[in-house]
Image 1 (tube, rainbow, N blue to C red):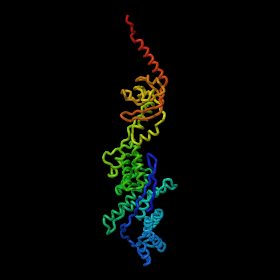
Image 2: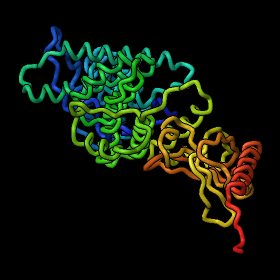
Image 3: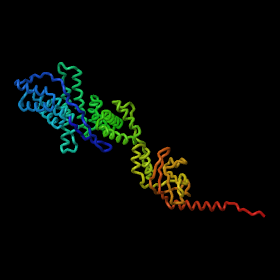
Image 4: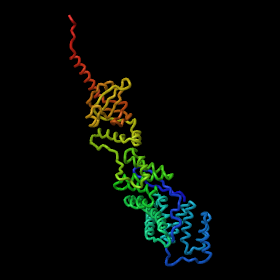
Length: 445
């Protein structure tokens, strides 16, 4: 059939997931015949019967279509009109003309509102043809939901005809039940009724455990629910991406990208992301205890200076692609904070002083552990600072080190002049004291 695309609204990070249906007849050719009704359909003439048989026996869909249309035009009141309309629908499917197949399905339902093949085809195409930007989007949703719910009701009441084996009956029922449940879940999802979407999508997954559309919708419903269920959501998004990739689906890159975005948004980095993807591809349900934990973040302290440093640390300590993207935004940006001197040492370049600054309580309590390293090359008095001196500075974010302890490197550092003046005065006073302490050397007589 024709490739149909549907736009699904993505959460957490905005995007679009396009799904392509399988190249198959979703209505299920070779369906078992319904049980005999009270009034059997009758041929009105041999010519009518021959015209019907002509298109039934024709294997070329391009040649079959005009035969069907000729039959419908010549015998508009035939007892077999609905059968001919179903054949027209399925022929358009074979000809990759989904628009005319949908129109034919609607004609089938006008003749027989309970015709399962037509209901199944409309529900199958519904997630691919629905456009939330259309003026009649709300009507589309209501109609699609109603058709899928009615199809499920008809299917539940459908009795196995005589002469049909259990296996044949199951092969007819199962894919249609999955189609109807997926459409119901999709409609509820689009209406933001996420809790109501989960149950039918779970049911559809039981019938079609490897369908990427159903799995992707289920994952999105879980992460969109209130409260969100990130563990189930991430698992089913990963499974949808893995199975689409295994099937060489053109949608696989988009599904994997969306899974990756959700995983990193939840976990803070891509650590473990590929392992979950591989695991989900081989298991229909998450293992017991599966848990994608959010990154640890510092709670606000009320100290603006301390909280500003913690925000930078939280953005970079997560690691992976998230940290790299965050650093692209932060690098070469100005920074200004207040702390206390941990230690001072000469820099590798002549005339450069490295001033290590403590900001957090942990750094202040442990010698040799610091939060900021200032690279100062224009203020000679910076080398006169001592541990414990309060220091206020401005500079440019130049680098960061995540392990073994996190600290930021600040280039072009400018330390508050008053702090340096006090350090210089203290150094001068110490020199004077040192002079007075020196013993007076007497010349030998």
